[in-house]
Amino acid sequence: MKILIVGTAFPLRGGIAHFNGLLASHLAKRHIVETITFRRQYPSFLFPGTTQSETGGTPPDVTPAPALIDSINPFNWIAVAREIRRRGPDLLIFKYWLPFFGPCFGTIAKCAKRGTRTNVIFICDNIVPHERRPGDILFTNYAFRQADAFIVQSDAVERDLLERFPGRRYKKVPHPVYENFGARIDKDRARATLGIAAKKVLLYFGYVRPYKGVLVLLEAVKRLKDAGAAEDLVVLIVGEYYDDESKYRGCASELALGDSVRFVSEYVPNDQVGRYFSAADAVVLPYLSATQSGIAQIAYNFDTPVIATEVGGLAEVARDGVTGYVVPPNDPGALASAIRRFYDEGRGPAFSANVAEEKKKYSWDRLVSSIEELSGMSA
Image (cartoon, rainbow, N blue to C red):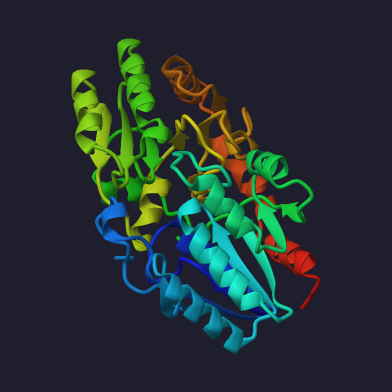
């Protein structure tokens, strides 16, 4: 089968690019696979980060995808569809996470399919976005009308699909583990490279946005300090800010968290991700809302336990009492109690061993097989 993946890909950065790159490499074991990506993914005024490109150099065995797509130029969408028709794929795959891309992806799919036998599959991170904007439903409806089938990766997204698009062909497949960041390194060595002397290390990793609950995490650390349970503890807040950074630093200052919190306010290149997850005893996902989180799948790559809130699909990955803890959202007291229990009961090694076993079900082969079944083709 000839497959074309359309969307974010290296040299663009971020979780979607990582996902598409891994998907392409696993599909390529059994199929002919090409990828095309954006030459303009977001207009600069809509992008709150510092750069849309990967800064860690070209990973081994990775070829940059042709940059053809302009997300805001309808004439370009038609030209890209013509190029896709020229290449003649049996299957087009789109990773869908934001309605902003609905008109672009929908038009490309519609024009590329016309008069051909090409199938279209949308792999859905979200159907209803966390931060809603005018046009979200209209744009999503337009894009989804062009799809022959869908893959959802959590119960929450499955419910949204069934509610808004009943009767559509789909499969639910858990988000595979991000295996592109290398293997776990020795914890003490990882901490030494980061200049961490504390004996207890927790990690928040990823973009900092209001719905991700970092302020709740800071309040939880305050409660731990007040209870005398934050001795020799450091919480790393690592990621680029898609919100006012001063709000978070100001909160930490007002709560007098001192050395208990360290901010690393930057996008971490691929080749440096592993040392943060290897240094951490657990990853904390204090989200106020979510459908799923790729951060949990990075943690699992490094056998790192996860302490998460019970929103979206997080509780499907962070199994309470098995691979971590699950607490109610927006509840700093409950989060602090889970962190304290994690350390008081010495659960880290057992949870880490359970993660090593649990992550086996988050395989790329399972996703590839589901794509083949939905497309009606096999290797």
